Length: 421
Image 1 (cartoon, one colour):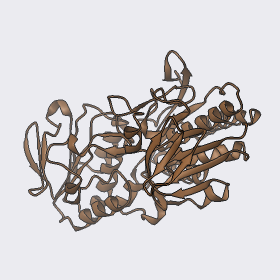
Image 2: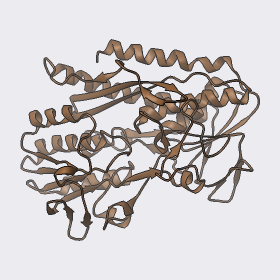
Image 3: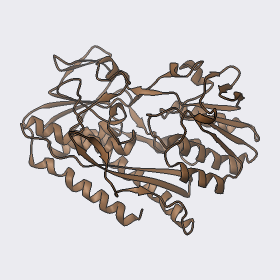
Image 4: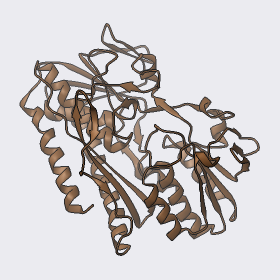
């Protein structure tokens, strides 16, 4: 996809998102739980579109460490500080930021209770808690076992632990990566991780191997990743599909072994990415369905389980949209527009949704997938035919891949500014 086409897509979304300005809200209080890409965007756009609305954002952490570009930290090409976003921009925009953990939601009284016992009343609530990891979904694995076999699927301390293990691994060692079955946060993420670690190994530990034991038979951007692996890291990466025995049956953290369909495999460093579900607050408030994720109205992201509540980001079931930072950012804007229209007693604007996902194979080799979505009440969120697309499978030269890597860094800067200010 060309840079011009991306600009057209971005412009069309921006025009549609300006529409809620025409429907200013009546006085109202909105509480947002979670300051990731979805929650931060919703809070910021609520104030941007109608400064009169009272917006309170509840966040457990003092700052946000983003999952996008955390794989670059594992590869040694980025620092944790470089992917840490301050909440100061939200405060400057007029959002009341409350440091604390939302422990319960009283749906009847419209109140959020924090772990310290305090309560915050709302007229509308946005729940954007991200994911919880289902440690029990992998036999032998646990939260404690993540100290030996890191998941690093929530960026921060686990990212640094896995990086330290990779640095300490001997040249000629084996790094095992275990991606989960769908759905999960950031579908291309495990394979970008494999790529950037392979890039590090190529430079520093060239005798090392990477074994990918996958629960799935295919994965996002598979053709692009595998072509890059063959070209950039020949003989280093072995990906095993679920149908070929790649699905992991159990792990033994003490022995650093992983049992799959063709026996027990030992790794010097083992990265277990367990199954996932909506964040704990969504579970405790009964906003999630039996599958662990939160069903929503695709037109507004209003919960189908509770009134006056919207669920956005990774926690939601969003049809064809993947669980990604780009998706969460887009959904935050749609929810903000729908809430302002609702408070004003007007119909919600027609949503515009897209997703762009960049992946780095090396710091100078990028690939991407872009999708534009159409939203209807009967079919939900579906991919728009002949819109978006993948990077070309075989570029005329690697300059295009280098340009995509530059686009990835530009996307990250821009979406960070858009989300947190």
